[in-house]
Image (cartoon, rainbow, N blue to C red; front, side, top):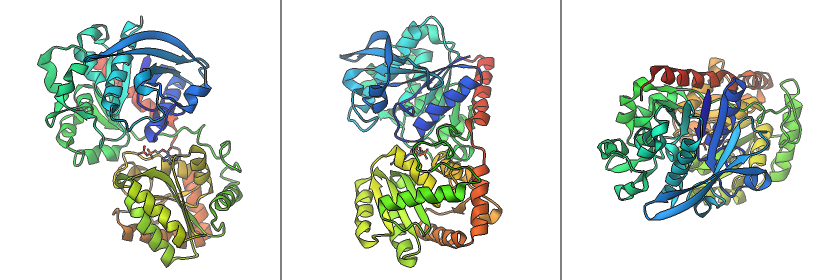
Length: 475
Ligand code: ADP
């Protein structure tokens, strides 16, 4: 069947977090399963856009109230990604380096959705399914059903996959005129909590709703930034599907971004070499256990706890451990983390920013990865860490609950229940003891490296849902 994924991110074109990894990998595995896959993302000014060949396949123009934005559709020409990648080029709105964070994000993503649908509705073939991702594409299920100009796409089935329900793409009804004309009798679908809520629209109007882990689906019925009752009301058309990982991109035996490749058999020596490189780069001691964190420095990720955890763990265990942090986000957290460098020189370091290569090296060279998240819809870091033989230390929440089991229960990691400094430090202490017990440490590392989180198995679950909504034939 022909399947479109429409998203704000897709690795390697544009990545901020896990959304990009999923949209960059799932379609590849769906192609391998025999389907025709096309991925559509905005044309940002990124390295991938500038270093690869594209051809123009469509031109059009989007009207947003009084504004008119010419757009073009570009197709990546090599097909090396394992699916067809299309970029929606709206120069005025997307020819910028960042994916999000601009004052006109609403205008950017509303026009992106309209341009994508204008192009799709002008094609000869009507796709079977459009899989939308997060609020940036949440209006699509509504527009397909009710906008007059997409009459020829009424049969297309839609799925919205929720990677993060905290962000919902709210805007005022004063911008209602941005949307293509539709019968106003349906305007209620757009409203949630007195504003136009893009994610809520997607949840109401899509034929199916998926979340990126089963536990996250349970959790958002209780806490979902105001959408709890809506999630409850759509339970019969929702399912939590645990994300997979791209085992070709994330493979310690082939990864070109790390210093020494290794497999399960050679993991001890391979990881040590990568650790030595990391420690040299960040002035740490390779003979001590290395605890790392990679991610967005926000409360949601427990980022605010990291300065205190680092200070406490390093003073209690001073000279026994190293801590290395890679991330960016809240500037107060960033400043606190940078400040700690002076106090714990030789045992602690931080890299503020986004660095894909460094992330790979950290997964390869660390002994433990810290994930103290308050909210974690799925979390990919723990799965990459497991594959690279790095033991995850996680708070039991969302997808972390579904993928990491405490070693006390014969599992693959270390778990705690509270997003608190005390709980995290207690886990760090358990990890230090485990590190000294080489037999058990290697046993747990092995369990992790043998865990299969590949998309091959998981992508079939998406296909099952597509088949289900096609068979049901509800418009
Ligand atoms: P998120 O909520 O941010 O999407 P996930 O765990 O699902 O969290 O995915 C995070 C992805 O982003 C992983 O591939 C991780 O390695 C990557 N990542 C996060 N922060 C950084 C950073 N500062 N530098 C490099 N990669 C990063």
